[in-house]
Amino acid sequence: MSLLILGGTGTLGRQIVRRALAEGFQVKCLVRSFRKSSFLKEWGAELIYGDLKAPETIPLTLVGITAIIDASSARHSDLYSTTQIDLYSKRIIIEAAKKAKIQKYIFFSILNAYKYPEIPLMNMKLKIEKGLKESGLNYTIFTLAGFFQGLITQYALPILEKKAVWITKSKTTIAYIDTQDIARLTIKSLSIEQSKRCILPLVGNYAWNSLEIIELCEKLSGQRSKIRRVPVYLLKLTQQFTKLFQWSWNISDRLAFTEVISRGDNFNSSMKDVYILLNTNKKEIIELDVYMQEYFTKIMKKLRELNNLEAIESTKF
Image 1 (cartoon, helix red, strand yellow):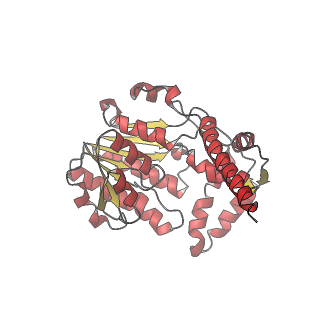
Image 2 (cartoon, rainbow, N blue to C red):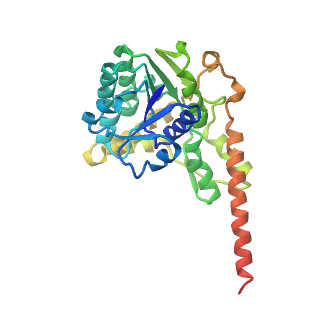
Image 3 (tube, rainbow, N blue to C red):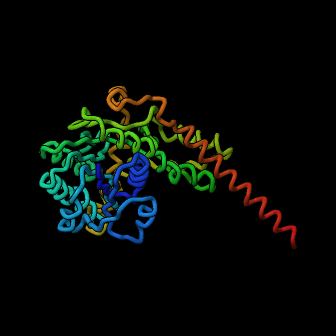
């Protein structure tokens, strides 16, 4: 089976590329910059030029492809890019996939997106889901809540660097999952006939709130956090203000996620049926505390080595 992976340089995409290569698949990656994607080639993937902003470059990339795994995402700093990548270009890709008789199309959406159609990114994901359902393609849509990897910059690093950790009083909980687990289950689904034309959640075993993650990081790092709370009403007011100016629309779109925070939603779903379908076990999914333990162990070891090196250097003078 020959795979075309979109978004191969991203946090999730690169894990899918690595897993697919490890499983023996022929992997091609759609890229805009060969220089920035060179590490994928070093791993063994074939790089094919294509730009989701230029749909005319897409059809030729599908020659000889059996399945598409779409892990590309919008860059929130660019409203035009968000519109192009997550909607118009995806429609072009889906149409091209139909003409090329692609056997499987895997797409990643957002868990609970249907509850927030007023949020631009959620709305685009819902429209792409609808497009796949109506396309006649054999698709699998995985709905995700959040990645472990994103928690490092949001919580772990600020605590280690003794910087402020900004949170709200919201009770929103999210079942984060390791991108390596997502990649493993995604590749596994390619060989499972029953996964076709399904929408499946891919989430972790426990839904965490912000304070629980901070407490975990404090425990593992041995350092106290500097928590700063932002009132939700202030975020909402800022969003309404930024809507008034075209130059700040992209900021407004990002602040639209304030609505998610204010509702105190639970981004979690039962994985029981998914485990059965994909012939896997709950125990195979890495837990957040284990992931964070490994991260802090590595970081604290490096810090000790640096301190020892500095101590040795200081004795030379």
